[in-house]
Image (tube, rainbow, N blue to C red; front, top):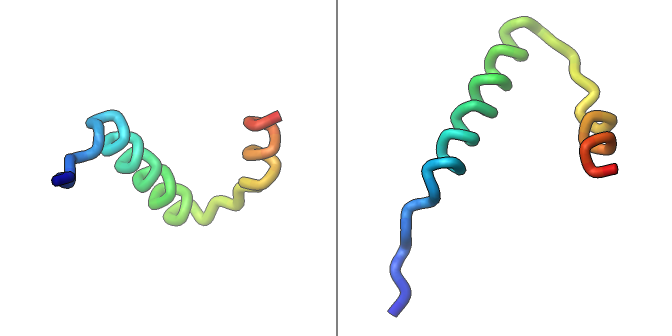
Length: 43
């Protein structure tokens, strides 16, 4: 029988950091070209 396990601590903290960055950018009314950042990261 499979049980639910908590995610790794790294994943939890990464999620919190990304949420914080999003809230800060929203508060500053920042405009970020996420598509180009993503394409540069995966290229």
